[in-house]
Length: 549
Image 1 (cartoon, rainbow, N blue to C red):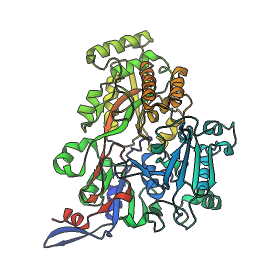
Image 2 (cartoon, rainbow, N blue to C red):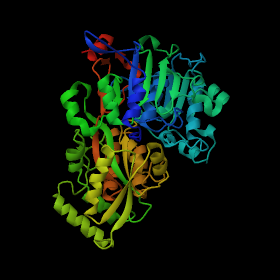
Image 3 (cartoon, rainbow, N blue to C red):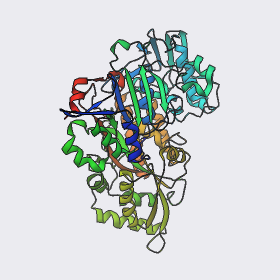
Image 4 (tube, one colour):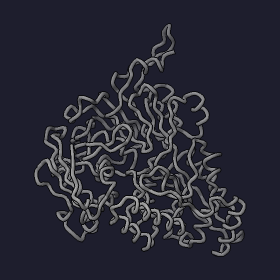
């Protein structure tokens, strides 16, 4: 899913919002924080969610909240591994194309039973062309999903059926060994048809929204916080320890760090990389920067000149010094990326990389300059272009962009940096309204296809408009391959073709950028970055001790 990493609010605004929830008492033991309710978890979320409608969500910030509100057929455990959710068990046909899920007895937060029809309704809504869901393609492994989404078949042709209220039969176009993990994704959650039909677009508002997850939506104050309370109707409510979860919009990472230090936040999604040395020296217990299944990259809009020219795209790839970006600018443990698929992806052979990975930097620059001259550019005819970033204030995104901006000047490209609010950035990049855009992608599920789908012709998240029939053919072949090793080999061929075509500019693979105080129990560092509130608890004595002096 696309990273929701932007910075908009000033430090003062964020701090004021947080301090409104605090009171302070000074006594013989020093200064102590008081006023927070026991059993309340205060979570910093990297940005304001655009929606909580599972059919329309697309970012991490939305995922972190909707995963508290809904549970799919499968769900993620504390270590982000797929485990049974609403489906208690399942079986598959010998050819791997028909899956039958047996649903547990579960109810919506208003007491209405959760049935197989709720999944059929949700999935049909996801691929309904009238809804225009950005993640509709995620369901393309389901029989007829792509044709339904294209308007070539009716919604009823989607390969899902309900033999009875507690059985969901899913027929696939091809075997999908990653299906169970895919079914943890936020867009595959069931949706309450009775609530949506009764309230329309208002069905996601507090007091109206009907959920089947561990929490219920109580309050949403735009650009400030979202409050959730424990759902007593949740099937596993007896094992949910946190009574209330407040997700704060903390898109100013420096301000969020101050709130962590002050005890206003228990966890935070993203720390400011520019302060990593201070964090390591003073708060090492709050971070665990393990490798994450995510990649940061520059998308070059192949639909616009001069990036339709492979010589220019290769020149940009050659000019970007990934080691400088990771080692001198960010300095948080990210790994320079010379391919698209991150280390750690399941059933995928390593080995692909841009062919200049080990070439000395001066040689790279000379080759890049030669390519630019071949394309008609040079010191007297420079490329004037724009470089869009998902940030509106000073910070690490701007610092990385400025470093790359300087690298591009060496190959006759003058790129003006355009800081953009995240919501606007997302809409514009999806509409291909950019020249160069810095993007990031966190795995929707642990499989190489989640990255390669970004470059499928006409794909919903193919922002750079790359198109190669040979690449599409390889993806189609992989979908028909049931053997996971042979399938991995085919996907590796597809990645190699992307690199040969200079389809994008990989920058680095992320180290997990999350903060959590040790008194938050059940917080398991994992490469997917999922930390569902359902599995967490608070050691209240340890929390009180953390902020008393």
